[in-house]
Length: 115
Image 1 (cartoon, rainbow, N blue to C red):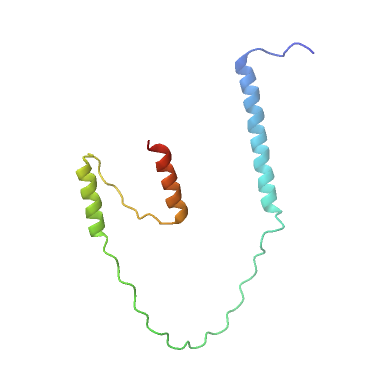
Image 2: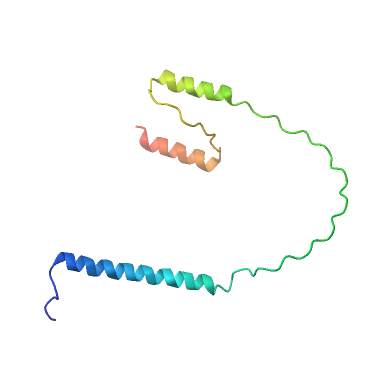
């Protein structure tokens, strides 16, 4: 083996960073090339003239679901936070989607963090 070209760490850093950025730029070009010649992309078809719509039969009238008033829930949450003694300001209240996976994950997290 021969002697190293340089032992200056800044020059070694610059060479290594140049190599990394060159490889990243090359990968960017390869990705763009793949997008251009992608054989699995769906072909855009010219829009066909739609046939004249027929008169639709009268649809049955469906009653709309009543809107839920969340003001009571928001007031209860705000009162609970205020009673707890936190001087924080409530910015948003979002409903949680209750799925079994999420509930199980939260229960596991609580079991692991609470003594």
